Amino acid sequence: MKTLVHYKTIVNSLFQFGIQQPKEHQDRIWDILETSGLEIYISSRGLDTIYQDVKRQSGFEAANYAKTKFQSSFHVCPPVSFEDARAFGNLHGGNSYEELLEIYSASLISAEFILSNTPQVFSSFNLTEIPLTSGIDLSFIHNHRRANGLPILLVGDFPSIWFLINAIKTKNSPASVNLRHWFQLKTSDPNWHPIGELNIKSFQPVYRSRQVQRVKLISLKASEQREPESVALIVAVENPLKEFNVTIELVSAKPGGLLPNCLKLQVLNADGVCLEEDTVNHQNAIVMKIEGEESELFSVQINYNRFVHQENFII
Image 1 (cartoon, helix red, strand yellow):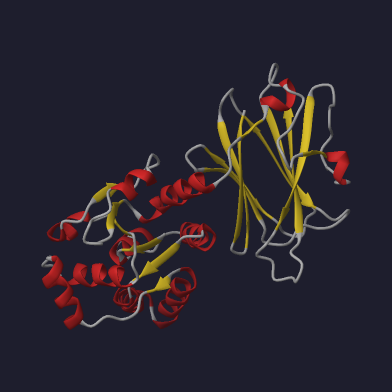
Image 2: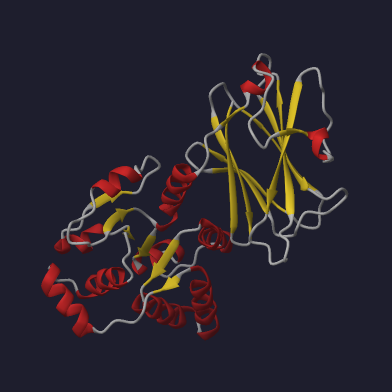
């Protein structure tokens, strides 16, 4: 799905009208973009405007750094001429020059959405508006596409792009693995195996009388190696009749091997909000322990370069 982010919304989120946000806040947003799998665009004019704003406020070096980050994380729309944009506006209405260039840029790339936290500036274009929240329904969106082909206006701050990413992943992701079945039915889902079958070493103790442990091999398909490296995702769950404790462990599929650096493991709640995360730095395992209640949903997500893999679970 192609989404153009209104450049003023980006400025409001990243720079708060000229006051630069903490670096970890910006890094978090760059990380969202680089691992989302979405086609996120910024207009050429918007990028130039941000560059000039940063240059004026923070200097040439900061402006070049910001531009480089945007170019590596966003797709940049082709430049547009005012004459072409005005002809487009004559067909579709609208009397705001700045926003006309944004909508025209979005139309040229056949974007499905424009994300903006100032929807009032687009009011003269009569776009379909949908709040971008955790409960966004993609099927509803597709059923309400405008006949004239104009993009839908998603109303929200830039970090709310998480909700769109999560909705797409939920739609495309496999059904949740029911961890209670590992105890009650004495079976596990396809591709989840007893750890001894695959000669994988866990670094956590296993209490066989009250714990079931399963492992799944995952190929890091974005690896630059000719043969992508594989990792092993190990999930151990306590007997749900007594406790609802889950241990999540990520190790190399090679005996004694190290995990690739910069690989990230995240635990997400049902809304896609990150509860816990860790990034590999010369280590052989990542281990996380969580607690939950019966029927609670959570997901485990692996990010490596631009490769993203998600497993969904229900306790």
